Image (cartoon, rainbow, N blue to C red):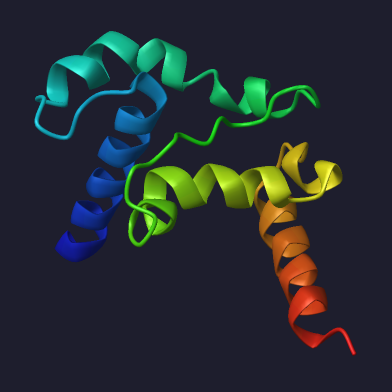
Length: 107
């Protein structure tokens, strides 16, 4: 269970760094405290059809495009709009699974 909590904390920290454009060398705790209220409003931002995540530029073509900070927004933006607009995590999981199966098994 400790590994699950640690993984969750790392994911939360990474998301906060991406959203706030914070360097990995900066301490994350003050950023989390400062932005905690704005991070809770993300689902309402995601429900807007006009909102796409920005994909940061990168210098190294071998590693930069594969970095989480580049690949995550690119993958999110590639999802169909009806999936990005879902309000329920249960519906999101179901729809994303269906979408990925269709992509993987399309003949």
